Every structure is written in C-alpha cells, then in structure tokens.
Length: 122
Image (cartoon, rainbow, N blue to C red):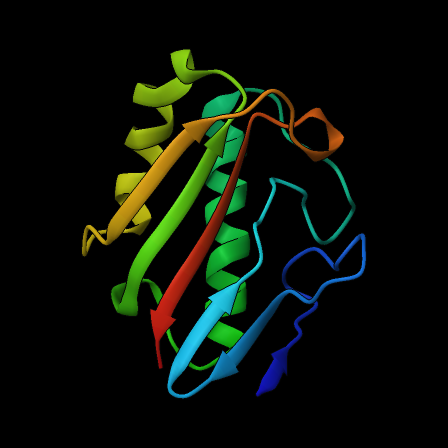
C-alpha cells in the first residue's frame, strides 16, 4: 500500500490519509469543498460541488490516474434538495458515469453542503 499525499487537496483534519493506492486501485478519502490554498469554503452547492470535485481530482492526479478511471463514488449531501444542482456539476467531472451512491446526511464536517469520495483504477 502507498499513501497518497498532495498539497493540491486539503490535508487530512483527522487520523486519516487523503488516499491510498493498492493492487492497482486508488481509494480517496471523502473530499469536502475546502480550498487547499487558503482553507476557505465557497458559498452555495454549485461552488462547493465544484471544489469537492477539484479536490478529488487532485488526489487522483497525485496517484497517477484521473476521473476517467473512477469506477465508484460515494456522495454525501447535507440537503437532498441540492441533488439536481450537485449533479449538474458532478456530471462535468465524472463523465464516465461511474457507479455511485448519493445520500443525505444530517451534517458534514465544517457544515459544508457536500462531500465526495472515489475509487479508481490506476
């Protein structure tokens, strides 16, 4: 196993890694919409979905893979009313339409509106 670590995505805020590579697969931790440059969180579901996707992409890139190799995502929304707006942004990045679970949760870290984790081939 190899730990994935990049400055282009937010650092872990707890006892976990940004991601792992093992047996030709990449597993990312859930990515919330924190800008890795300044720690800010944008306003609104569209901007937050965009930043979460960028953060996932940075980890995939650090592992030597990309969105086209993602086979499964898990998406967490603070409000299922944001589903359509979230999907509009998500679809721009995950063009291969990987398998996906999307659930509403009571609360996410830093009170953000969404979080995305991914599994990809190398």
